[in-house]
Image (cartoon, rainbow, N blue to C red; front, side, top):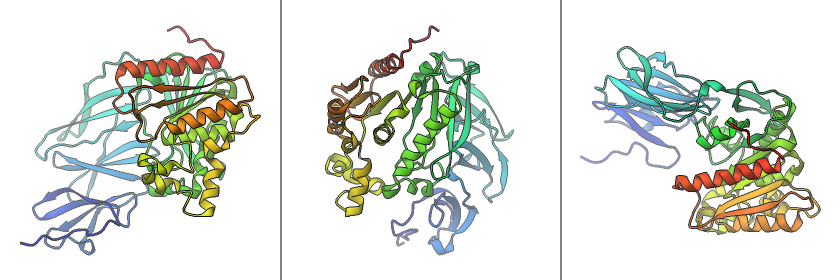
Length: 421
């Protein structure tokens, strides 16, 4: 019997979710950027025969199956919401999640009576929950062993307005009872690229920062995937400045609402987030006290000539594609926008000497430019991890050393001492 193509081009992403006999359940973003579930008979599986089972919504869909049901997880303002459907496309219920945060997929065999999922957010270590398919209820199955008490902390989502009027969500986490008097050391973290979404997750390092009295803030800026492909495209190529404007507006919000001041604000990001930090600190050096660009893409005129760099052209564009693109990249490229006579924030650049994704030359050149042209007294240092790459697979011992250096550098330059716990 000859093979039949369901999709014979690369204009969309389509995959098989499940089947019931010859009835196929497909997940696709064909004419549905936020994805939808369709059904089709395997005898005539091409797109003109598809029928919507779970239609596209304004939120990004990530479905799974288990226990004889379909679970449609949506990212709503970067927060997980999960809905249970039957195989006829009828919505049964919204799953009552343990809080506002990120849930993993509920998945398993069709015959399973119990499914498992994990849940986390910035102040909740990852716990595992059991979902009873017949009772349609979930309860705690295994609690994290992390020695951290979420009851002592608060994590809330706010919305602020960027330069062009776009509303941006941000989650702010900290100890309960802090005063909004501008005296709180604050770490603002961002990424903003490659359709990657920053959803809430627990980190021991961030927990240490909050336990010391720090505020941890994560805005879901354009360039990411929090609102689908349109959100991503609003921060690529000659719209990249939107990403930096969104991050700058987040810092201004935190200052205006008296979470912190410029003298107690640190900004941090890695890889594409390192570019974000580099661009923002060169555009608005007075806005923050400390800048922590990690393994950053910092030479925007030549990034595509190194290792994997050519693959990033969809997001960045290339200097050689047009005069306009060259000038746009030159206008924000961190390496090329360090100005003599400028007071830059205290800066600790971090990289790995064997990073073959974002080669360390980016960080070397940026450090050299800053050190040569820094007009103020704030230090500019580079920390080079030896026998290390882009960051994946870093052993715990090295992670502890890295964060000890990052937090010590940050607090010292803010003129603060770590608070006793």
